[in-house]
Length: 380
Image (cartoon, rainbow, N blue to C red; front, side):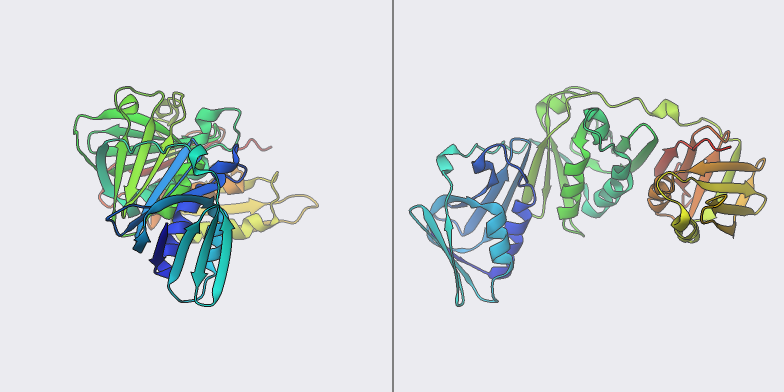
């Protein structure tokens, strides 16, 4: 196997493929990246797989000799990222690989390619949407997913497919984040869901190219049932990623959102975020952030007694009886920071009942695209 590649495009493809490599592989070959140059083709295929997530990319190269080789993916990524600005020559010779770029030369040992597992096929395409919209939605909901692996279903982001609407939802039992967005399904009657590991989905979203379309593909096992063993695939800018789904039903979260509110505040999103960050400087992990809403004002407070204290007041639009609530600062900021509109609505029922943050739709009467339910803390 032998080829010459442009340094920048080769380094980009290698880095993209290496992102899914496991930090602690269960088998040594799973730390490898497979490079394949096919006969009569100018495309070099790079792939990685850990039995859960697979990644496949192609890059244009000048192939002098076809073949396939398996090398340490992370080491190759580090090498090509630091090469000088010159074409990259790659040559496999028995159990070694020689990488040459300008005056720099590296020799890598190969891994046994015959022990490397076959990558799963990409499922059949189900539809597409804007990559930018999908990235934004993932960033809004993924912070609400649990990091506790003892309850796997809470570590995922649930993607519900219903006609031309995608709904992404995540929860860790203390908050629920939900985002709806439009997509173009191939089958307008598609009604199903896919529970995707949140960490994997976050990494996939980070790797997408802005200003492009993202293709979603569901395996038949997923598309044919409400939930269960299956796979979801993502295709963007000629690159493909697949991941196995969490084999569990997602929580029935919709009934947890209050149907009516007793009070509502309309706040300028950015100023409130900055005020929360300032006041929370005196709050450690166990110290609540207290917010007191009344006519045209919200007072933010943290700290008490002999501890450091902070307070700040902001103007708001408020309707309803005055109310005082308290939150874990990070939980409140995760929700408020995910609101993309200039203003945010905060809906209340009782001081100890769930509070809902949402964006303010462009037109009155429209439903919000993003909703974030968070449980307040009990304070004396």
